[in-house]
Image 1: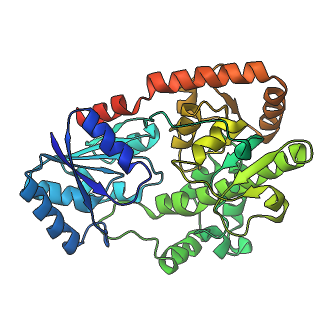
Image 2: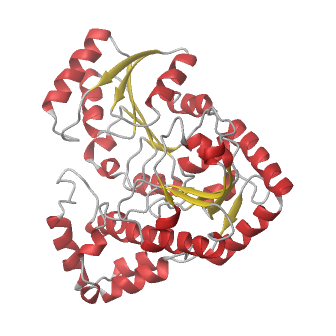
Image 3: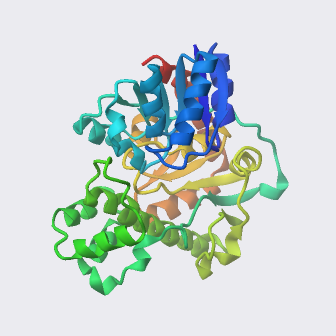
Length: 384
């Protein structure tokens, strides 16, 4: 099949193009800024010209762009998109209902929510991963590492509200931190009372309303964009601070992040961010324990970060997640925790048991290559 690949700067665009070619498809690269997800006339006209001029048989992209779906319907070809972000608000736009769509989503709960809204073109598709180039690198060798955002000063909308104005929300957020078997946020949003007006005002001020062509409720936007982000911020700060306190003096603990103004107690451990393709694999391979703390808006899915670590042969210590337990054997292919205390104890245990940790890392690498091979997963998308 002759496929036009829309390029917007995603980390794995080159990997996607290479995989498409290995699967026997002709790839037509197309890079163009998207200025509006549903009403970008300049992008639409350029894309239509490229598609018709090249006689493309399909359109493909990382993540879902409604404008691409609209163009695909115009030229009557299928649009394949593979979603790795969560939340991903464009999935709640009217064009998601179109029959030209083939939308693979890595989070099974999100798939169910969209199908309940009659988005028939979405289906569950865990992400895939290809082997990274790794090697021993002394500059990245350490005992414990975390690679990711702290979300300090990065669209931290919750901090713009006064906590005394939203006491019920504050209680729900506090209860949700490291709570995996209950849903305080959902319970709160069923009856937010007068606090809803505070959040709606924030949505307007920060221009978080996606547009009238979207079918998300205010409560869904508030949860994903504001409340779950705040829970993530608190979980990451609390757990990383606990690791610094427990291991900081005796172990080499590193936090690779691009976040500005990290909390003071973490500053001694903060290192520069690492390039996804060249340096990040070296961190994963050369760290004894790689810590994953999933973004809270990912409800069930396997984060790409976990697959990346495993593919590099790194040992994963992650918060518990439904699909991680479904696809991996805990204690044999990775390690999971349900509380900060459990995370600390498991980290200490595996740091003290090299052979067991290395055996688990090896089995995890084998498992991810067998079950999440990039070409195989991509083939599932294209067969829809």
